[in-house]
Amino acid sequence: MALIRSCRRWLNVCLLAMPLSCVAATPARTAEPQPLPDFRKLVKQNEAAVVNISSTQAPSKQNTNRKPGLPDLPGKENPYLEFFKRFFQDRPELPGDRQSNSLGSGFVISADGYILTNAHVAQDADKIIVRLSDQRERPAKVIGVDDLTDVAVLKIEGDNLPTVKIGDSDALEVGEWVLAIGSPFGLEHTATQGIVSAVGRNLPSGTYVPFIQSDVAVNPGSSGGPLFNLRGEVVGINSQIYSSTGGYMGLSFAIPIKLAIQVVEQLKATGEVTRGWLGVLLQAVNNDLAEAFKLDRPRGALVAQILPDSPAISAGFKPGDVILRYGGEPVEDSSQLPRMIGVTPVGKTVAMSILRNGEPLEIKATIARLETVEDPVTTMDEHSEPRLSITVADLSNEQRRMLSADEQGVLVTALDAGPAANAGLYPDDIILQINHIPVKSANQFVELAKELPKGKAVPIWVRRENETLYLAVRLPDDVPTPQAVPR
Image (cartoon, one colour):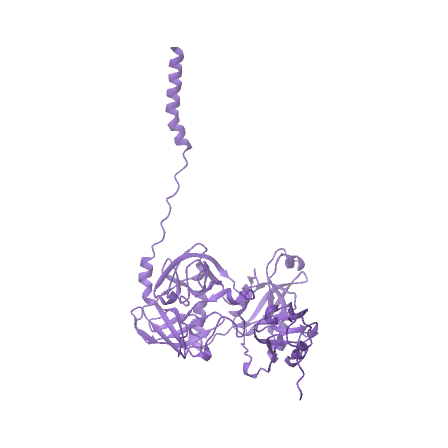
């Protein structure tokens, strides 16, 4: 009995103790999960300021994302041509059509009718119609277009028009909720939401734009529409998408509104945008280059080439210099520097900290104006080479000036399906050598091509953008041999 009473007392102690121990072991209650944001109020407050833009282009002015003359060859696509798609919607041309219609989006930034959209929505348009939220349509005048930032300003007649509130794109943080309103596929006032995936994103097509990356669903027709933060402020202009199909695949890119407003002010004042120019071609610094140039880590902008008659030459820059600070601001990545130079007032002298042969050095340069030089296409002397299915032209003086002293060449202007396209050549490539022989003119290239052997791979040395590479072209065994023509 004594044993039983002892066991009972022990059991009662255990039973009494168990709840206490359980309470002690229970973890502290976690914070209640936050509900998803409610965008209804934001949409109601802003949808009236978002407009649909329809532009009409004559066939001679129509633009395509694919370069002229580029063949549709399986497995031969240049990824950079289709990688980042600008996305306004083109209506398929119908029989008898003499013009092409495009759809995009925009938003009103002032009550008297100024509208912000993308340059590629308004560019080269013969006629632009803006449809307001109440379905009224008004013709729009193009105030200015800036290709380098893909920003355009339109103007319609009106008073007391609903406007958006401009926010601070510099304050955006990764993970922040954002919402887009636009006209994907012509479906007006469509709202989609997501989060900011990255800020300051550098893209191949946007040297002067630190893009806002998000996972907001945008599609053809959304181009030029606003990107809002949760306070209902515009923080960006939807501009591009990552796509291999032409549709949304989880990544979209917007122009920061702070940059866009700077462009707007210049376009409204003068109709154009003035940018600073130093005259250097830059290269990113990776781990190996950091070690080679005696840097503690990958940072800065490596000067790969100095352009003739540039402020960089006058300042004493040399290839191999690594620019670490610009006007007192650190340069962590080469993509930062063009933007920093671009917003510098023309004529301003800027101090830069560089590393030359491992030694720190201070250099001052007076920033000049960036000029856009367009080569007159109509004056090109083109030559076709049927064996390679390629058309080439002599280089312009400006194009020759961009090459180094030991480089000459000819410009690829068009390609059909054939050996040259199969080798990986693209329009705008510059052919420097063929079969180890320097190419000096389009006429000489045609003569050299006639001597190429059948069925044998022959090297072609090519400059593409700012890089050179080798390709191998092979003439098939059954290609016709050129016949001498009696004169």
